Length: 152
Image (cartoon, rainbow, N blue to C red; front, side):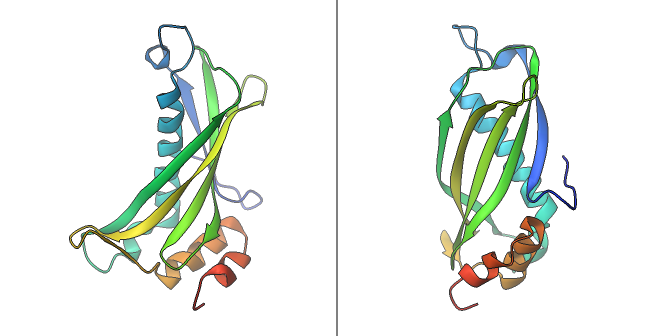
């Protein structure tokens, strides 16, 4: 994982594994989503999401995910995956993803997911903790994220 003071969000590198390819000889579409999952988890770690839990059953959840596939990837290789929070609501936030082929810097896929902060025991979304949103704004170098939140 990399996170520099001049770059918002979180960027990780993922190796393209032989087993990531499908019968047609390119990386299977589900693997692109797995790359995004790895970046999302790295983002949550950089955020320190566990410190915002009121109880052990609280945590992030995802309600939608979409990707635009721009380029086929093949083994061997490495991709850089960036995750950025681009919008914040009362109970949800949007994470945008960019997957780049490190061989030439081209965008292999981009997309987003809508995430929530969830009380898993009650099976319902909770309001986003204000300190978590503040940390997102800090990580993204984007104070506007604080202003987007209803009631902020």
